[in-house]
Image (tube, rainbow, N blue to C red; front, side):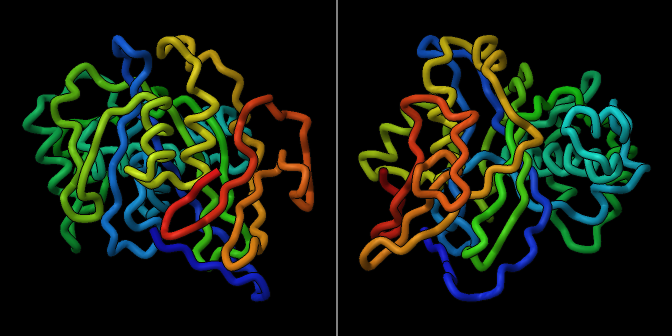
Length: 283
């Protein structure tokens, strides 16, 4: 995984983004769907991530058919701009379909339509998202998304995002859950505990927001309990980057050495800092 920090430069403005933790119950507890980003990707290349990406202009198109309006989406996110709030929901749903093949929608949609819609989203010069949804009879389900948290890339990172994290129960048919073979090159259903264990063994790479989010969920016995955990969807979490010897560490806001340390929402036992070494993150 390649990251680029500039400790002395002027911070760039973060771009809006959204990501979805698609979850399902298993005998070992809740499982989360992961995709592995291609090593060629400039941002988090090689990392195991939740499906997601940045907002496109068309995500804010009022013609995109959804089951919630802008006002309802704004209330869910604590976001004053209703159009932005709805666009964040739409981006999460669109990226989830593009990167995982899972469609969160209102009403029943056949598997062939799901696959066709996913394929239709890829080509350049394609019809608009609103037009594609109408063509396949799809109404996106914003209500299926549970707002979870909000992460802002550190100011020292050269590519920055203001990313909303959502959680969503997997649709009944998960047989189409598969990486896209382009931006993402592998995929897996993993419990939070298993994903963290694999990251500790350096079998997979988890970025700090991914690792911390999983750590918050690791003791939930099932999806219902996971969804009942406390969450702060409107409070931005902005880590800080500090030099540590010949490398860097990312400090979360509840770390005592974070410049704006805030322990008001801290939970005991959660990691508060991550050190970048040899292309991966470690505690």
